[in-house]
Length: 204
View (cartoon, rainbow, N blue to C red):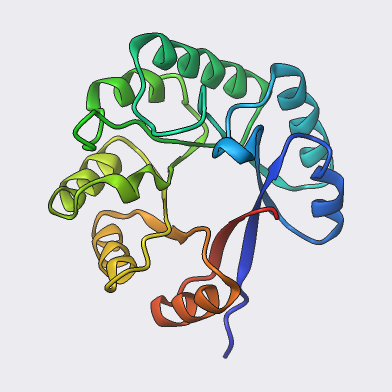
């Protein structure tokens, strides 16, 4: 029996939401400024996107990032993320995608604890910032994310069976790996190999 492979598109702002819903997507991720890697949309865009998605029985995930670039944030940027998470929660966003690392590319435990406290009721996805974590620290990172209530993990690290290892480690602690940013050929290969049914793609 063939497993249906679902794609969660990452779209830029509100303008592409209707077309992606009409295309049949049941999970959609929303961000602004994809050229810089994706940042948080405005409150107004957030509100209208949630309303429209829910009117069409579509789950909406929101990227929470105060700027593009590496997910190494200072205290002010973390406070901005916390405020955006509170807005998202109040507006009924289904899930959020975020990440925060230290300068050594390990989990910013203190920063993450601050911001995820504002995310009650929403599913939590750790972003592809995970791919910057050194291999020797990844299992510990996954254990911590699971303990903090994260549900999903994005990774595009398809080198030397890293996705397979991540999938196995994530399964042990109850996290679901979602491969991200792969080519169509890579997506099919990885999904078949790992038995996954959901992948993540920024919209071209």
